[in-house]
Image 1 (cartoon, rainbow, N blue to C red):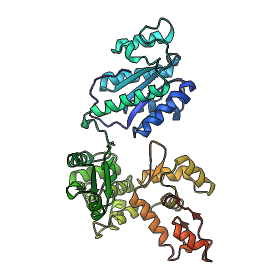
Image 2 (cartoon, rainbow, N blue to C red):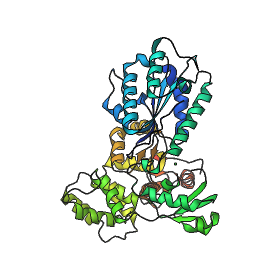
Image 3 (cartoon, one colour):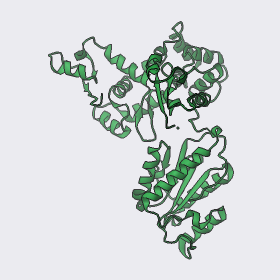
Amino acid sequence: MASTSSTPPNQCKKWDVFISFRGDNTRYGIISHLSKSLKDKQIKTFTDEGLHKGEEISPELLKIIRESSVSIVILSENYANSPLCLDELVEILKCKEESGQIVLPVFYKKKTVHKRPTTGSALDGSKQLIRMGFTEYEVNYSLLYESKLVEEIINDVLEKFSYMPKNDDSYDCNLIGIESRVEKVEWLINDKQVMGIWGMGGTGKTTIAQEGSRIIVTSRYRQVLEYVCSKDGIYEVENLIHSQGLELFSLHAFKQNLPKEGYMELSEKATTYAGFNPLALKVLGSHLFNMGIEEWKRELKKLKGESLEKIQDVLKTSNDELGKIEKKIFLNVACFFKGQNKDEVERTLEVFGFYPKSGIPRLINKSLITVSSLNEIHMHDLLEQMGKDIVIKECKQPGGRSRLWNYEDISHVLTTEMFEAKCHGLYEDVQS
């Protein structure tokens, strides 16, 4: 397998890897294995099976190719017979030339290793790759078993990422200030096998701890870390500085790096109320998005005078403005569905009449939930706890609550006569 040596551009890349391929013979063979292996390595990977197929490449697919750091082209026997695949290849080569995208072409199930193909699409493909600077020996894997081929590709991709400069934005564009904090952790970890990251909820501890192989423990409680780490192996995550907080807030409130004209003073107040906590800034900004100035004033008035440490008040503001059905979906995710497959969650919610097709996108837009590249629904720990607290406050006795997820509460309710009609959801986490 060959690769380019160009340096990736200094721009946001939403995808680590884009895979271009053709046909069910590859989709259910090498592609399924390769895609799973890449995702298992926490490499954000896109394959185009989720997009509507047509004769011409869609603007959405073009955008995804441009937003990828690496393109893997699986050149199967009939790849060049597909106009769509050729359009993808043209765009990939354009990205290679213009922005230094890394390209890894793979000849799949070819019978020659050193000898040049003489007829058909394989010849055309070889000529293109040779003109690109790849040699035939580098792009032929015909004698490798499929599992070995996947292993070789994964290793090559990991190697390319290890040489990428840090300023290629290996992190999400919206993770303002994350790089400097990761650098501090990398410096601190040095030769330590175990280290701790300490900070209040929403400061990005888990995000900072991700992209390494050492044991890293995150906690809101320093004393917990002192049991497993040396004192000089604990990093306290600081909140964002003023400029970073304003930028993060603006990205979610205005979809740009700075506040709109006329909103600067209100934005300054909003970031102060959020205590420059990344999660609170993200949720509050998303909540205020598309509101007028008078609406901003009313919403921020609710937070005036609150302690800057009471981040839950900021988070609850966003939840309070949800519709009745959306609130129920939020509580169900918090109590039952965190980490589960989005499609399965939607099917379950539809059975109970919760209209998830419109409700879930609303929660995503409000930054209350996210959907991972593996199509799993996730929610920040603080938001999960807020949802569970809302349910707990419904009634002092578990039997009077709308949802039960704790083993002790479920057992208590089912073994007494306190089970009321109010409870319409039970969930037991057998792993806890």
